[in-house]
Image (cartoon, rainbow, N blue to C red; front, side, top):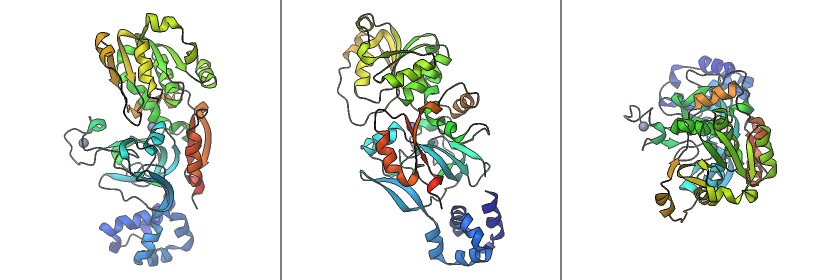
Length: 382
Ligand SMILES: [Zn+2]
Ligand SMILES: [Zn+2]
């Protein structure tokens, strides 16, 4: 923000350099507008008062702690580590993973949220809208990264594993994780970069899928994105789901659809699906996939489910089924698809709440008739 940059430079006395300087920068970014009104002299005075610095460093954040979640008004503004930048969050998306985390998946403690668009407050993208990859490596010269960052044993994951996420006014993230958002891609599209990248990951892992008959199980958010990505790459796709309205949205994109209750018995008898992609987010998804996939076919698991599952692995051996776990994907590919309008995402947005009402937003997101619930971070901002 030019405004806060001016203040930063104007008040950039040498006494604010060093470790304290970092905190001071954050305060100004956070309360830049108020400080601008009050004048630079006031800013300089306030900076000398340590308690003022601490007060100004608070923000709203939705925090999960020991299984209890709540919106905090007094969460500390994150302090970016080396090579990290502070991002002012504009818009965040609620994802199935957030709902799973609230049920105990990963035993996560911290600020939730990993799908976001924001404005970089420092670093080479200062002032630009950015989205961020969620896997972060805290090690400076890590032998595995950046190529294997998604699987680095030392990684943290935004809002999922040992790193505060984006249901907050500010998030700290390694600069190398950021991707600038093309100007003509609005926030409502850009916020889908992370889940869309996850859909594109299937093409990276299993390029042959484009020549296969594919069943996508699940007509929710991820099912819709995966089906579009696979169909646009040439695969023959049919989406199987439980909700007529959601299937109608898929049909509107020229995707073949089938209600789960109407799945023909021959599909189980003949098992003609070469690939089945499980996007159900349900423990029963994998069982269905096993019943529908062809011997020597491939099951791609896109959803994570809290808790453990019991199932017999013998059918996988007997039928020589390949099971492929699939998680995060390439942001640059997803951003390009969004910029070129190859993938439709806006119809997924069914509700929008300010951060101050995130509890309602999360409750709503649990309902099966909801697709993507967005959280406007700026609305609650003074
Ligand atoms: Zn997600
Ligand atoms: Zn690493």
